[in-house]
Each structure stands twice: as structure tokens, then as C-alpha cells.
Length: 168
Image 1 (cartoon, rainbow, N blue to C red):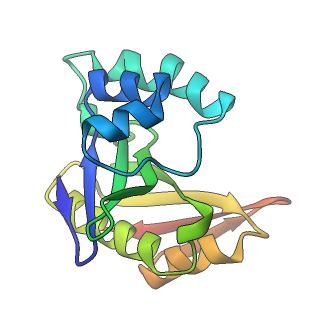
Image 2 (image 1 turned 180 degrees about the vertical axis):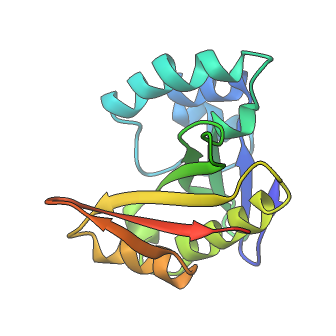
């Protein structure tokens, strides 16, 4: 678990992730938390079932790079969003990160703080040399979150932008 000033960032075990997608409200209540206000959509659920879970249970893989990390606001004890990696470091030590914040918790600095916490955690992994993130080029808030954490734009496409942070 990673702790920042206002947040706990908790990686979910395979069992916890299954509970989270089956019944987000029951899962949160088991942990003594207020559930996320964003229910898991079908695309996310499908990605978790088909991509994340099979890799989490594979003992040859580092589950931290295949699970969902929930963002818990310490004072309210509420799940306010999530972060995940898109797998273990690629050949050149690059990982991709994805994230989302519940609507009511956006523009309060939570995701900037979360990404910063993840960067500090990932610096301990000597196999990771850089982190990338892709977002829609119209998602100015997401781009600003990354830029505040020293990510730099490396590629612009028709509908998206890719930003990168070199760790070493």
C-alpha cells in the first residue's frame, strides 16, 4: 500500500478484484469504505476479466503491474478512483499507466497526488526506466495531471496524446 498526504493507494489481490467487479458496493463495505461513485462499466469489467485477472494469478508475473490500485481518501474513507498499469515493463523498461477519478472528486488534486505516489513507489523497481500515459487530446485535465508530475508529450495523434516520464 502506498500512502500520500490525503490518500491510501491499495493494490487489489485477485480475490479483491473479483469482489470489486462483482459487487463494488459490497466490496467497499467489507473494507469499511464508501464505494466509488463510478460503477465499473462493461469495457472495464471485460478488461479486468480477460486481461488483468489471468495475469494476477500467474505466479511468474508481478501482480502489482496487472491489478487495479484503488484510491482511498483517508478522511472520508471513500474509494475515489483507481490506477492500473498495462502490464509489466516492456523490453526497454517502459510501463504504461491508466487512471480515473470519480466525477465528484475531480479537479481537487487527487490524481496528481496519486500519480506522484505511484512514481515514488515505482522508482524502487529497477526494471522500470520510464512511464507512459495516453489520453484523449481534448482531456486537458488529464494532460495537466501528467505534466504536473513532469511527464512530457512525446507523440500527438489525431485523437490522443502520449506523455512520458523518464525514471532514470
